[in-house]
Amino acid sequence: MITEAQKDLIKGTIPVLKEHGVALTSHFYKRMFTHNPELKHIFNMGNQQNARQQTALATAVLAYAEHIDNPSVLLSAVKHIGQKHSSLNIRPEHYQIVGKHLLASIQEVLGDAASDELIEAWKVAYFQLADLMIGVEKEMYDQMIQHDGGWTGWKPFNVVKVVAETAEIQSIYLEPTDGGKLPVHTPGQYVSVRVFLPELHLYQPRQYSLSDASNGKYLRISVKKEAVEGKPDGMVSNYIHQYFQVGKQLELTAPTGSFNLVENEHPHIFISGGVGQTPLIAMLEHLVSREGQNTITWIHGCRNNDLHAFKDRIQVLESQYPNITCFSFYDEAQPINNGAIPGWVDLAKIDSDHLPQQANYYLCGPAGFIEKHFQYLTGQGIDASNIHFEEFGPASLQLN
Image (cartoon, rainbow, N blue to C red):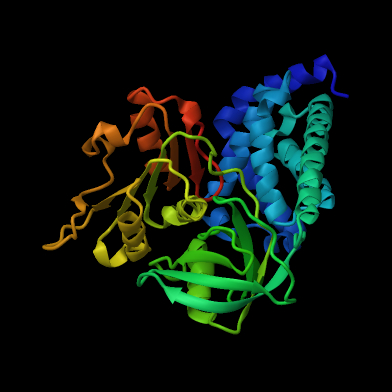
């Protein structure tokens, strides 16, 4: 049990974490991968290259230090991290390895300032947090196998269909290799997939939103190929586009995630940029299958008409269901834009009738996209609790 004196020592490191947190976590990851290179198979090495993972960990460590008196306020963040961990098959033994290298990194980075008492305080604090995370993740693993057809760990799936939605985005339809049942998944959830990249000699995991409603027949992911080949954060998507055709196998973890559809009588407003529409498509398909009467506004932005994935499907749904209204933004000017609004997504150009105060708002896309529209909506008086968002990659947004 952590003592009050140890809490004070932890709080005393807050200024250092604010100024040098990313340097500390960068040292930690370098140290851990040097001594335990097998963990490179678990971590997204693209996010190591672009420093997003180091920044996310630094933010989490700082938040824990700032709330060491009452860590329960971080429960929502803990659950979010737990979902990411369960999707990567993180197990209790991994916390021992991480703790060893994190404590050593604190000592090595702080040098003489790292007294034995401070290191002991952080040791107690870390393993207190680790026990909390392990407990949360155990519940998640238990829930996964309680669902009919559920599983934990990596499970092989057959690629049974590949559809080119655009020149950049492919939808991949997957069925269990063992012919077993699929668990019911919630619209908005994601799965992790992993592939072996020969150029890195590593398995690399990535998370992809499920882009169709739960149907008991297949899981569908829609993968955008990154334009710049050779970038670590684009290696998996490029590899999937190049090699994963019908008959190939992909390994998946079970669906998870808390970016879920709100089931109530209020309108649903979906706002996405680029491939950010994938979890929102699943939500829309779910609503259509339920034949609900909620008013639905669909707002999507992409570069141009040719790169507008799921465009035909959205148009069909809009023509079939009078409660659906769609707006498209194309930021590349074209002579014919099929009624799209030119420029980036701009909610100020949408009539306020389609952005009501009492509604369920869903944002999905890059961090900057989410932050821009979150600020606009709250500025219009929309309650922040009614705005739900999913950020791609390690969490960096602190919106409230």
